[in-house]
Image (cartoon, rainbow, N blue to C red):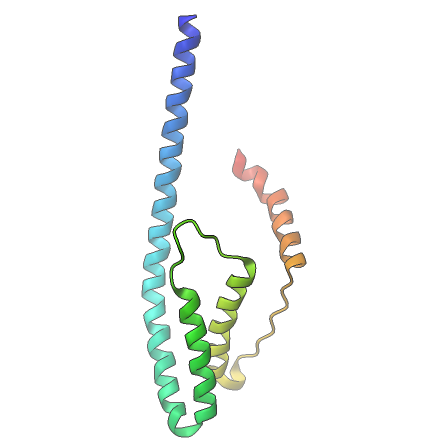
Length: 138
């Protein structure tokens, strides 16, 4: 009976250690992404504002459009409550606002076509899970 109790206690300790390790790895990944985000976004913001400033003098309607996309992008960039998950639609709207700004800044050099449906995204996610998931579990 003691051996069983020791085995159960050891298993619980291992599970707690695994959970702590997973939590630490998640925090590290979030910190790395936050650092990358902090490095990239200021340049994007400065370049977009400089473009909008130029457009206010040369093409006010286009400047207005760019600023509208920038407002949408920044609104969707704000952190949500801690446990709130974003939907696929939220992520697409955020990406769309970003890409529309780039399209305005780059003019005819950037062509954009987004063709994403929830059905297609779910199919890709399930395919990814079927193909990659088993390799991750091992």
